[in-house]
Image 1 (tube, helix red, strand yellow):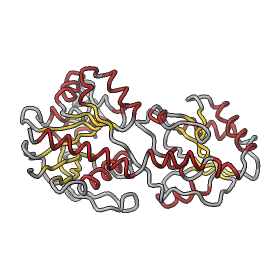
Image 2 (cartoon, rainbow, N blue to C red; image 1 turned 180 degrees about the vertical axis):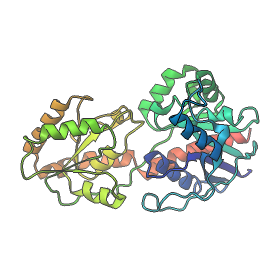
Image 3 (spheres, helix red, strand yellow; image 1 turned 30 degrees about the vertical axis):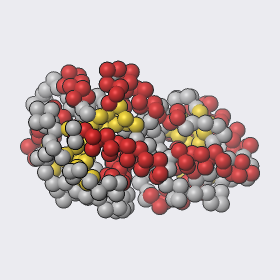
Image 4 (cartoon, rainbow, N blue to C red; image 1 turned 90 degrees about the horizontal axis):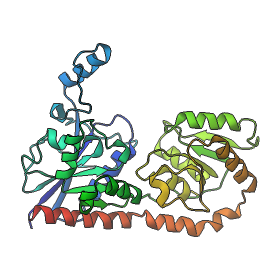
Length: 353
C-alpha cells in the first residue's frame, strides 16, 4: 500500500485555540496509527498585498466587494510558525508547500475556509479533500453560497465532532449524508482531576461576556461571603487545571458550540456545571452533574447557583463518581483514536481507488 499524507490547513494562530488544538492532536494521533500514513499541518496567513488591502479598506471604502470571506488565492504559507509551548507542548509535523499530489495527498480544510477548495482549484486538479466542521456556526465562510455549496458537494468527506453537528449537517445537506463522518474528541482525565474543594465558582468569560457580567452583577448581593467567583481568562493551562480541580461549581456560557469541551473538563474535575448547553453539549448535558439554564435567563441562572450552593454536600463528589467515569469513557483518548483509525481507513480507501 502506498504512503498517504493527511494534510490539515490552519490559520496562523496568535493565541490558544480549542479548534486548533483538536487538529494538532488529530494530526499527532494519525502519525502513530498506520505506518502508511503521515500527517502534517500547513499554517496559512494573508500575503502582504492582501493584508495591506484589507487594512486600507477598513479606513477608506476602497476595494469594496460584494463577496465576503477570505480569498484563498491570496494566502501564503507561514513556514516559521509553530504554536506556543504554553498552549501546545507536543511536536507536530509542519508542511511547507501547497503543491499537492492527487495520488497520495488528502487535504483537510477547516469550515472557516471551506470555500478555499474552489479558490485553490482542488476539484479541477483532482485533489481529494475533506471539510472539518468543528463549529457549524462558522460554516458561512463566504456569502457566495454557490461557491460554498460546490466546496461541500465536491468534498470526499465532511468531518464533524458531535451528534448535534451531524444532525445539523444532515438537515442542511440532505444529499451529502453518506459523506458525513463523526470523529470523537477526548479530554485527558489524567489532567482534570478532583482535589480538595474550596467554596469557589469558576467560569470562562470569553464567550458571552455581557451575560457573565450581568450574572455577576445579579449575584453581588446574593452570593454568600465565604464563596468566591474566579474568571479563567488569559491564564495558562496549568492554572485552568488547578482552578477547576478545587472549584465546586463551573458556570457555562457555551454558545453555538460544535461540542463544547470546557464543561466536560470542569465536570471531570468534580464541578457541578450550571449554565448554557450551547448546542453540541446536548449529548452529554445530563443530571446530576449538568444543570441546564436557557440562554439569556439570568435570573434563573442566579437562582440555580444559589440553590446549589445551599444544597452542596461533600458527599456529592462520591455520589457523582460513576457519572464522571462514564463521561471520561465517552471522551477518552481510546475512543478518539478508534474514530480516527476509522477515518484513516476511509481516506486510504479513497486514495487507493
